[in-house]
Amino acid sequence: MSRQIEFLHPEPLPRTGRVWPVFLPFAGCPYRCLFCAQDRQTGRDAATLREARDSLVRDLESALAAGHGPYELAFYGGTFTALPAPWPETFLALAARFRDAGLISRVRCSTRPDCADPASLARLRSLGLDMVELGVQSFDDQALAASGRGYGGETARQGCRAVREAGLALGIQLLPGLPGDRPGVFRRDAGIVAGLAPEIARLYPCLVIRGTGLASAWECGRYAPWTLERTRRELAAALPVLWAAGVRVVRVGLAPEGALERDILAGPWHPALGQSVRGLALLGLVEDAAKRLGQRPMRLNVPRRYQGELFGHGGELRGEYAALGLPQRAIRYADSAGFVLL
Ligand code: SF4
Image (cartoon, rainbow, N blue to C red):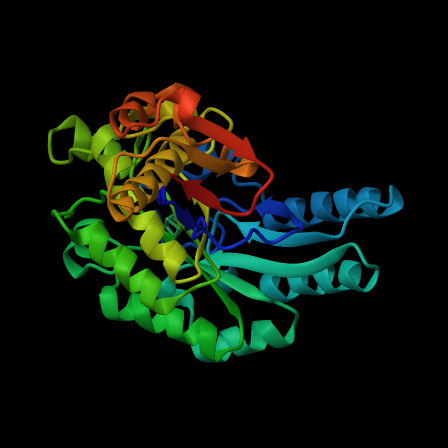
Protein backbone atom coordinates (compact mmCIF):
# COMPACT_ATOMS: atom_id res chain seq x y z
CA MET A 1 0.00 0.00 0.00
CA SER A 2 1.37 3.43 -0.89
CA ARG A 3 2.12 5.66 2.07
CA GLN A 4 1.00 9.22 2.52
CA ILE A 5 1.64 11.98 5.03
CA GLU A 6 -1.04 14.53 5.84
CA PHE A 7 -0.16 17.78 7.56
CA LEU A 8 -1.61 21.19 8.25
CA HIS A 9 0.22 24.48 7.78
CA PRO A 10 1.08 25.55 11.34
CA GLU A 11 0.42 29.24 10.77
CA PRO A 12 -2.36 30.58 13.07
CA LEU A 13 -5.40 31.76 11.17
CA PRO A 14 -5.40 35.46 10.27
CA ARG A 15 -7.61 37.79 12.24
CA THR A 16 -10.30 39.41 10.19
CA GLY A 17 -10.72 43.17 10.25
CA ARG A 18 -8.93 46.06 8.69
CA VAL A 19 -6.28 48.14 10.39
CA TRP A 20 -6.43 51.94 10.04
CA PRO A 21 -2.84 53.10 10.60
CA VAL A 22 -2.21 56.58 12.00
CA PHE A 23 1.48 57.49 11.67
CA LEU A 24 2.94 59.83 14.26
CA PRO A 25 6.63 59.75 13.21
CA PHE A 26 8.99 60.07 16.20
CA ALA A 27 6.18 61.45 18.40
CA GLY A 28 7.03 60.76 22.04
CA CYS A 29 10.40 59.18 21.18
CA PRO A 30 12.95 60.06 23.87
CA TYR A 31 15.61 60.32 21.14
CA ARG A 32 16.15 59.12 17.61
CA CYS A 33 17.41 55.54 17.45
CA LEU A 34 20.48 54.71 15.38
CA PHE A 35 18.63 52.75 12.69
CA CYS A 36 15.29 54.54 12.64
CA ALA A 37 13.89 56.55 9.74
CA GLN A 38 10.18 56.55 10.55
CA ASP A 39 9.57 59.53 8.28
CA ARG A 40 10.98 57.62 5.29
CA GLN A 41 9.48 54.27 6.29
CA THR A 42 6.00 55.69 6.58
CA GLY A 43 6.33 58.31 3.88
CA ARG A 44 5.08 60.89 6.41
CA ASP A 45 6.75 63.97 7.82
CA ALA A 46 6.54 64.55 11.53
CA ALA A 47 3.36 66.63 11.49
CA THR A 48 2.42 68.27 14.76
CA LEU A 49 0.15 66.21 16.96
CA ARG A 50 -2.57 68.83 16.53
CA GLU A 51 -2.41 68.45 12.71
CA ALA A 52 -2.43 64.67 13.04
CA ARG A 53 -5.50 64.81 15.28
CA ASP A 54 -7.36 67.23 13.01
CA SER A 55 -6.76 65.23 9.86
CA LEU A 56 -7.69 61.99 11.68
CA VAL A 57 -11.01 63.51 12.81
CA ARG A 58 -11.77 64.60 9.22
CA ASP A 59 -10.89 61.17 7.80
CA LEU A 60 -12.87 59.25 10.44
CA GLU A 61 -15.90 61.47 9.94
CA SER A 62 -15.77 60.88 6.16
CA ALA A 63 -15.44 57.11 6.65
CA LEU A 64 -18.36 57.08 9.07
CA ALA A 65 -20.53 59.12 6.73
CA ALA A 66 -19.67 56.74 3.88
CA GLY A 67 -20.72 53.73 5.99
CA HIS A 68 -17.22 52.19 6.01
CA GLY A 69 -15.64 50.13 8.77
CA PRO A 70 -15.27 48.82 11.34
CA TYR A 71 -11.54 49.38 11.64
CA GLU A 72 -8.85 48.71 14.16
CA LEU A 73 -7.25 52.09 14.80
CA ALA A 74 -3.46 51.79 15.14
CA PHE A 75 -1.15 54.59 16.31
CA TYR A 76 2.26 53.82 14.82
CA GLY A 77 5.61 55.44 14.10
CA GLY A 78 6.50 56.80 17.50
CA THR A 79 6.35 56.10 21.23
CA PHE A 80 2.65 56.47 21.96
CA THR A 81 2.85 55.81 25.69
CA ALA A 82 5.43 58.61 26.06
CA LEU A 83 3.49 61.26 24.14
CA PRO A 84 3.28 64.45 26.18
CA ALA A 85 0.06 64.92 28.14
CA PRO A 86 -2.72 65.14 27.19
CA TRP A 87 -2.09 63.52 23.78
CA PRO A 88 -2.51 59.81 24.62
CA GLU A 89 -5.80 60.70 26.34
CA THR A 90 -6.83 62.95 23.42
CA PHE A 91 -6.26 60.25 20.80
CA LEU A 92 -7.94 57.56 22.89
CA ALA A 93 -10.95 59.78 23.57
CA LEU A 94 -11.22 60.36 19.83
CA ALA A 95 -11.06 56.61 19.21
CA ALA A 96 -13.72 56.02 21.88
CA ARG A 97 -16.03 58.53 20.20
CA PHE A 98 -15.82 56.68 16.88
CA ARG A 99 -15.99 53.32 18.63
CA ASP A 100 -19.33 54.35 20.09
CA ALA A 101 -20.42 55.25 16.54
CA GLY A 102 -19.46 51.73 15.35
CA LEU A 103 -16.55 52.79 13.11
CA ILE A 104 -13.72 51.58 15.38
CA SER A 105 -13.60 48.08 16.81
CA ARG A 106 -10.20 48.01 18.52
CA VAL A 107 -7.32 50.38 19.30
CA ARG A 108 -3.62 49.61 19.32
CA CYS A 109 -0.38 51.56 19.53
CA SER A 110 3.33 51.02 19.21
CA THR A 111 5.85 51.95 21.87
CA ARG A 112 9.24 51.09 23.38
CA PRO A 113 9.65 48.48 26.13
CA ASP A 114 11.23 51.06 28.45
CA CYS A 115 8.17 53.30 28.07
CA ALA A 116 5.73 50.58 29.09
CA ASP A 117 5.32 50.90 32.85
CA PRO A 118 2.42 48.97 34.40
CA ALA A 119 0.62 52.01 35.87
CA SER A 120 0.45 54.02 32.64
CA LEU A 121 -0.50 50.94 30.60
CA ALA A 122 -3.35 50.20 33.01
CA ARG A 123 -4.53 53.81 32.69
CA LEU A 124 -4.42 53.69 28.88
CA ARG A 125 -6.33 50.43 28.94
CA SER A 126 -9.03 52.06 31.05
CA LEU A 127 -9.24 54.76 28.35
CA GLY A 128 -9.87 52.23 25.60
CA LEU A 129 -6.47 50.92 24.44
CA ASP A 130 -6.64 47.20 23.53
CA MET A 131 -3.21 46.26 22.27
CA VAL A 132 0.41 47.40 22.50
CA GLU A 133 3.05 46.56 19.93
CA LEU A 134 6.47 46.76 21.56
CA GLY A 135 9.46 47.71 19.43
CA VAL A 136 11.65 45.28 21.34
CA GLN A 137 14.10 44.91 18.41
CA SER A 138 16.17 42.31 20.32
CA PHE A 139 16.43 40.73 23.74
CA ASP A 140 20.22 40.55 23.44
CA ASP A 141 22.07 42.93 25.79
CA GLN A 142 25.05 43.32 23.46
CA ALA A 143 22.95 44.09 20.35
CA LEU A 144 20.76 46.51 22.31
CA ALA A 145 23.83 48.30 23.71
CA ALA A 146 25.59 48.51 20.33
CA SER A 147 22.39 49.90 18.82
CA GLY A 148 22.11 52.56 21.52
CA ARG A 149 18.61 51.48 22.53
CA GLY A 150 19.17 52.50 26.14
CA TYR A 151 17.73 49.34 27.71
CA GLY A 152 18.76 45.73 28.10
CA GLY A 153 17.15 42.37 27.48
CA GLU A 154 15.55 42.21 30.94
CA THR A 155 13.79 45.54 30.38
CA ALA A 156 12.52 44.21 27.04
CA ARG A 157 11.11 41.13 28.79
CA GLN A 158 9.65 43.23 31.60
CA GLY A 159 7.93 45.49 29.04
CA CYS A 160 6.26 42.44 27.49
CA ARG A 161 5.13 41.21 30.91
CA ALA A 162 3.79 44.67 31.81
CA VAL A 163 1.62 44.78 28.66
CA ARG A 164 0.16 41.39 29.56
CA GLU A 165 -0.37 42.26 33.21
CA ALA A 166 -2.28 45.39 32.19
CA GLY A 167 -4.73 43.12 30.36
CA LEU A 168 -3.61 44.34 26.93
CA ALA A 169 -2.91 42.19 23.88
CA LEU A 170 0.79 42.08 23.02
CA GLY A 171 2.66 42.50 19.75
CA ILE A 172 6.45 42.24 19.43
CA GLN A 173 8.67 43.71 16.76
CA LEU A 174 12.16 42.30 16.18
CA LEU A 175 14.97 43.81 14.10
CA PRO A 176 17.33 40.99 13.15
CA GLY A 177 20.86 42.00 12.15
CA LEU A 178 21.33 44.99 14.47
CA PRO A 179 24.81 46.29 15.30
CA GLY A 180 26.28 43.94 17.92
CA ASP A 181 24.61 40.94 16.28
CA ARG A 182 26.37 37.56 16.47
CA PRO A 183 25.47 34.15 15.08
CA GLY A 184 22.55 32.72 17.03
CA VAL A 185 21.19 36.01 18.43
CA PHE A 186 18.14 36.12 16.19
CA ARG A 187 17.41 32.44 16.74
CA ARG A 188 17.46 33.04 20.52
CA ASP A 189 15.30 36.15 20.12
CA ALA A 190 12.74 34.21 18.09
CA GLY A 191 12.71 31.51 20.80
CA ILE A 192 12.08 34.14 23.50
CA VAL A 193 9.22 35.61 21.46
CA ALA A 194 7.73 32.14 21.05
CA GLY A 195 7.94 31.68 24.83
CA LEU A 196 6.14 34.99 25.39
CA ALA A 197 3.49 33.98 22.82
CA PRO A 198 2.32 37.46 21.76
CA GLU A 199 -0.72 37.78 19.51
CA ILE A 200 1.42 39.07 16.65
CA ALA A 201 5.05 39.60 15.68
CA ARG A 202 6.71 41.71 13.03
CA LEU A 203 10.17 40.96 11.69
CA TYR A 204 11.99 43.88 10.12
CA PRO A 205 15.56 42.94 9.11
CA CYS A 206 17.85 45.87 9.85
CA LEU A 207 18.41 48.17 6.87
CA VAL A 208 20.77 51.09 6.37
CA ILE A 209 18.56 54.07 5.59
CA ARG A 210 19.85 57.44 4.47
CA GLY A 211 20.03 60.07 7.17
CA THR A 212 20.27 57.65 10.11
CA GLY A 213 23.15 57.15 12.53
CA LEU A 214 23.45 53.63 11.16
CA ALA A 215 24.16 55.07 7.69
CA SER A 216 27.20 56.90 9.11
CA ALA A 217 28.40 53.71 10.83
CA TRP A 218 27.98 51.75 7.59
CA GLU A 219 29.76 54.43 5.52
CA CYS A 220 32.86 54.23 7.69
CA GLY A 221 32.82 50.42 7.82
CA ARG A 222 31.63 50.03 11.43
CA TYR A 223 28.43 48.19 10.48
CA ALA A 224 27.71 45.47 7.95
CA PRO A 225 24.08 44.45 7.37
CA TRP A 226 22.92 40.89 6.82
CA THR A 227 22.91 39.60 3.26
CA LEU A 228 19.56 38.89 1.64
CA GLU A 229 20.32 35.17 1.55
CA ARG A 230 21.16 34.98 5.25
CA THR A 231 18.01 36.96 5.99
CA ARG A 232 15.84 34.55 4.00
CA ARG A 233 17.34 31.52 5.76
CA GLU A 234 17.24 32.94 9.31
CA LEU A 235 13.70 34.27 9.03
CA ALA A 236 12.41 31.11 7.34
CA ALA A 237 13.82 29.08 10.25
CA ALA A 238 12.12 31.39 12.78
CA LEU A 239 8.63 31.32 11.27
CA PRO A 240 7.71 27.72 12.22
CA VAL A 241 8.97 28.35 15.78
CA LEU A 242 6.68 31.38 16.09
CA TRP A 243 3.74 29.70 14.35
CA ALA A 244 4.01 26.68 16.66
CA ALA A 245 3.61 29.07 19.61
CA GLY A 246 0.43 30.50 18.08
CA VAL A 247 2.10 33.79 17.04
CA ARG A 248 0.81 35.40 13.86
CA VAL A 249 3.72 36.94 11.96
CA VAL A 250 1.93 39.82 10.32
CA ARG A 251 4.88 41.44 8.57
CA VAL A 252 8.26 40.32 7.27
CA GLY A 253 10.38 43.21 5.97
CA LEU A 254 9.45 46.82 5.39
CA ALA A 255 6.71 47.59 2.90
CA PRO A 256 7.76 49.81 -0.01
CA GLU A 257 6.31 53.09 1.28
CA GLY A 258 7.04 56.66 0.27
CA ALA A 259 10.65 57.35 -0.64
CA LEU A 260 11.90 54.33 1.27
CA GLU A 261 13.36 52.36 -1.64
CA ARG A 262 15.39 55.32 -2.84
CA ASP A 263 16.74 55.90 0.67
CA ILE A 264 17.89 52.34 1.41
CA LEU A 265 21.67 52.46 1.19
CA ALA A 266 22.37 48.84 2.13
CA GLY A 267 20.80 45.81 3.71
CA PRO A 268 18.48 42.91 2.92
CA TRP A 269 15.53 44.70 1.36
CA HIS A 270 13.42 43.01 -1.27
CA PRO A 271 9.87 44.00 -2.22
CA ALA A 272 8.70 40.37 -1.90
CA LEU A 273 10.80 39.34 1.10
CA GLY A 274 7.73 38.08 2.98
CA GLN A 275 6.64 35.81 0.14
CA SER A 276 10.20 34.54 -0.29
CA VAL A 277 10.63 33.79 3.43
CA ARG A 278 7.21 32.18 3.80
CA GLY A 279 7.89 30.04 0.74
CA LEU A 280 11.19 28.87 2.20
CA ALA A 281 9.54 28.09 5.54
CA LEU A 282 6.88 26.05 3.74
CA LEU A 283 9.59 24.17 1.82
CA GLY A 284 11.05 23.19 5.20
CA LEU A 285 7.68 21.77 6.28
CA VAL A 286 7.43 19.75 3.04
CA GLU A 287 11.02 18.47 3.48
CA ASP A 288 10.18 17.34 7.02
CA ALA A 289 7.09 15.54 5.71
CA ALA A 290 9.20 13.91 2.96
CA LYS A 291 11.57 12.54 5.62
CA ARG A 292 8.63 11.08 7.52
CA LEU A 293 7.28 9.57 4.30
CA GLY A 294 10.40 7.44 4.09
CA GLN A 295 10.36 7.20 0.30
CA ARG A 296 10.78 9.57 -2.62
CA PRO A 297 7.51 11.55 -2.90
CA MET A 298 5.48 11.41 -6.10
CA ARG A 299 2.81 14.01 -5.43
CA LEU A 300 1.94 16.90 -3.17
CA ASN A 301 -1.62 18.14 -2.71
CA VAL A 302 -1.55 21.78 -1.61
CA PRO A 303 -4.40 23.87 -0.17
CA ARG A 304 -5.18 26.52 -2.72
CA ARG A 305 -4.49 29.37 -0.30
CA TYR A 306 -0.77 28.49 -0.41
CA GLN A 307 -0.57 28.43 -4.21
CA GLY A 308 1.04 31.88 -4.36
CA GLU A 309 3.91 31.05 -2.02
CA LEU A 310 4.69 27.36 -2.55
CA PHE A 311 7.46 28.03 -5.07
CA GLY A 312 8.59 31.24 -3.36
CA HIS A 313 9.02 34.52 -5.14
CA GLY A 314 9.19 34.22 -8.93
CA GLY A 315 9.41 30.41 -8.73
CA GLU A 316 12.79 30.59 -6.92
CA LEU A 317 12.13 27.25 -5.14
CA ARG A 318 11.18 25.16 -8.17
CA GLY A 319 14.64 23.57 -8.25
CA GLU A 320 14.44 22.56 -4.57
CA TYR A 321 11.01 20.95 -5.07
CA ALA A 322 12.21 19.13 -8.21
CA ALA A 323 15.23 17.81 -6.29
CA LEU A 324 12.82 16.50 -3.67
CA GLY A 325 10.92 14.59 -6.38
CA LEU A 326 8.18 17.21 -6.69
CA PRO A 327 8.45 19.04 -10.03
CA GLN A 328 5.55 21.31 -10.92
CA ARG A 329 3.60 18.47 -12.56
CA ALA A 330 3.58 16.62 -9.22
CA ILE A 331 1.77 19.46 -7.45
CA ARG A 332 -2.04 19.56 -7.23
CA TYR A 333 -3.90 22.50 -5.75
CA ALA A 334 -7.14 21.68 -3.96
CA ASP A 335 -9.80 23.40 -1.86
CA SER A 336 -8.64 21.47 1.17
CA ALA A 337 -7.47 22.52 4.62
CA GLY A 338 -4.34 20.40 4.70
CA PHE A 339 -1.40 19.14 2.65
CA VAL A 340 -1.06 15.54 1.50
CA LEU A 341 2.32 14.15 0.45
CA LEU A 342 2.39 10.77 -1.23
S1 SF4 B 1 12.90 53.12 16.74
FE1 SF4 B 1 11.01 53.65 17.81
S2 SF4 B 1 11.73 54.76 19.63
FE2 SF4 B 1 13.44 54.79 18.18
S3 SF4 B 1 13.19 56.71 17.04
FE3 SF4 B 1 12.16 55.09 15.86
S4 SF4 B 1 10.02 55.18 16.48
FE4 SF4 B 1 11.21 56.29 18.02
